[in-house]
Image (cartoon, rainbow, N blue to C red):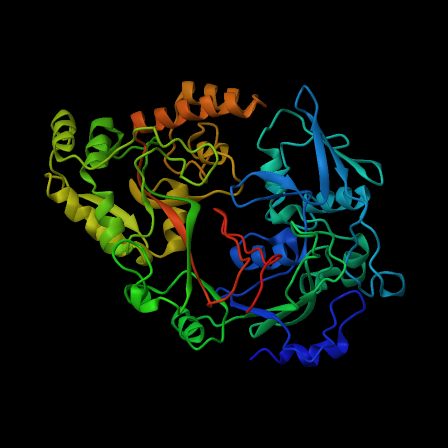
Length: 530
């Protein structure tokens, strides 16, 4: 039902949309099965919080559908020749949402001082934001954030870091007013004030979140029409994906992201396409997702014998796994075979010409014969969600003479074991925090501990090239370094790249303007309901 908003319209603040016509309000409904723990962008570490913050707040820059950096609150920017100073020129037509934290309840104009406050708050130890890492160790220790004037902001680094603009697109970097944090204190988590296309209206924790249209929003579409088009958004919190799917079938939800395994055969054919029986019942969206699924080998030091330090064995395992079977039989065609290195398709620097590993029994047997493997049983550690993949992988390897057995552990316990080097072979995944390949190569940088370097891969030449890439501002030149790094990972085989993940969404027929990008952000600025 959409008529919840009719009641809420009575109490809408001035400046947020007030629906006065007799037409049914256009309210977009989606479910967040994992719930939402906070609406404070300083704690935007999981999808539920990220999606909500993306609707309520803006950052200096944003990502388009092709994962390119585009202006948002900053209309343009400059990077100094030494790569240490980023100067952002802000829009002067952006206002915070109307809220009682402001004089007369009217949201004021955003200034560079708000950017200074928001970024300083993010790294304040008292806030304890899980996003503090994005600036810690990167920004200058003296005056890292500076408001030159109301519309010019400078960020100063201690050393070059070319992926910075991608980091600034993260929801951690949302801009918010100090007045709201001062007024609401810890309750700011449940009373956010931003500049985004939708204003916070009501949050019944565990039941529903309501957002209303920001009638003062600064962006317009290509024809000059003000955004957003929707009157509001309703987020429900059904914690069961089966219940969520049934609600979509009954048209109680306008979109679902991801489908419960129990229903995926009903919807998709073996090629990952929408079945004909669903034609006209839903709009199917599938897109690259910046998530690489892999099997990692522990290469660190230890007293116990470690068969996985044998590169020939690691290569034999890589060639002995049929990734296409995993995608076809266990994922209904969702995903793309991880045959082009560790960096997934969907990221701008993905290189489809890079030759990684594909199934080859002949090559697997060749490297197995060269290895020191003596027929001992190898244990593959994973969690319950990936049991089927582990079972299939072990069966595939047995066909080439490698004894393998899946070991199932709780996800949290497995992460602890991976961090402490207690498992020799494990299933892992790496989801990009920002759209730059550097984010993936950090997984293998020898000076990084676990996480992210769960394999303890250490190669001085790799580290030297990685550091050279970080010192290079020119994207084309940096991509040459990236290709070299990915080639080294393929050759040294510290991991088995299984597949590159994909985003899957279903929308109700007639809905338009809901775009999807490889970070699976929810963007409803241009969404229209029938």
